[in-house]
Length: 63
Image (cartoon, rainbow, N blue to C red; front, side, top):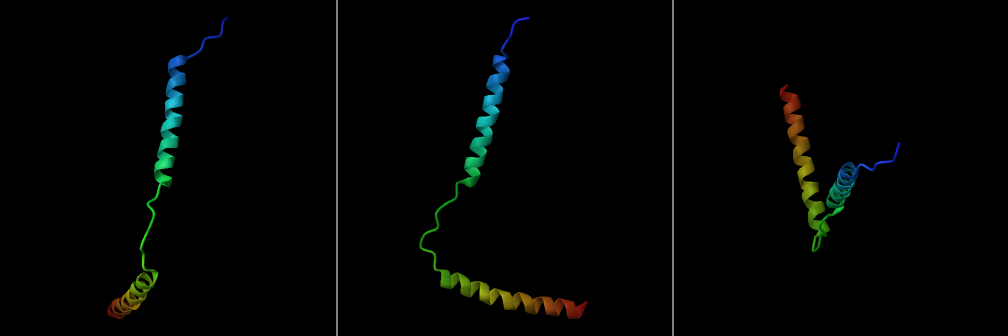
């Protein structure tokens, strides 16, 4: 019995592997954040948290 190579299957397997690596690379690619004011962001989150807590208290007292 001689050895035969499944060329078409081999090409498909290589293509699948390449597609997977391409997907992973696309997911890992992230934009660079520039000119971000951290103090402003922190102040926004600081203001949003007490309002959300107050809304939760109101909804719990109504229930």
